[in-house]
Image (cartoon, rainbow, N blue to C red; front, side):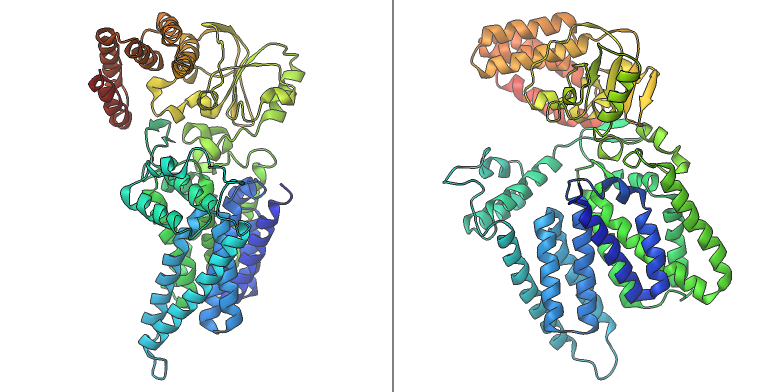
Length: 554
């Protein structure tokens, strides 16, 4: 995390330098304060993820291009190529950088109409040459970043699953483009595989907004997340930026366009993305908005000193709102209009609320209360085993335990305390509330909440759907091991506990089909299809064809 935090420091410094060069030292200092106390940057700035690094290198790329168009030189072309290359080896969203730069170049061509300037054609050729040189340099940096090696694995070993299987989940255009690059080895296999994997996951990942589960991403996710997760100061600065531009207090169309078009394009494209798993994916939008806010604030103060007091109050409120989340609530931050971190779980989940960050706090809780036996549905189990932190609980099934193939033995009745991370409590990753084994807990009031993300329930609870879920997982595993009779027995055990468990119905139908009991399998899948009709509309779109395909295969 210390190493990862270097990118956050670089980002803050770059934001200051950008604002200072574009709008003055005062603007740079205001921007720096806003950046340093931005809750979402504090939440993810030291995480070992790509989001802060991506924001850093996108800003570096745009800033480098801005300095180039102001005063072209070979050195500034090289800086653009280096920044772009760093962006490409940091995160796959760098594929949006070329259209951003082209869009900014077009604005430069359209703006320059004064006599004596180069002809537009000549300048367009110069931009094309600049992009070609910077692009080759960025391409070289990507190869250097991957050790000048195409193969993802050494000694001729194939990556598993193969790239071709991942490409099958993409649209024909995307799949063909990546396959062509792989065939010609234009980029390292690992980079191409990562791009295909991200696009593949984006096509199937559910979302959770305003307490509702959607089987896929929704266009309004990021606007909603921004309004909830941005500080009120940031939201108030948005109309102030427009006002400063409209009143010509904030001057310099080049600067305004360079700071507004890239995040606007990124934000619009993010709204079409089906991967809605956290505000961190638009972290870079905050950076550009806050630089513009710093410029607008300073320009208004310079034009009329009476602006100093209200703008100072806004900045102070930004700082206070951020400090209220210190030290443990930055990931779960929500502004005051939405109830703050304590209420964020009502509207959003995943890395916007719960990223499994509360294990040390859970350990303190069980120690203080002398808890020796408990149950825990933890977000990252088993990738991060909570028992490694000395938490004495038994694991409850989650989507992560399912994906990892963890076979559990949850009884139909459990004795609390029961701990739930917010993600498994919602079970949104399954794509429908009907698929959740914990629906009853969503309707209960927890005994306590740890760091806004782990919910505690005391008492004795019936959890037949969780027990049935475990039987369905075992049934699927046995079927893969070509043991259909044992798989059938496990599926039947699940049905006995929860006759309307979707997971158990599907497992039972698959086992019956494997044993060539097609008539029985048809009845089972028809029951499953009837259950699908009780799901949310988006979930029906996913599950109805899936079950229909099972029926057609009998």
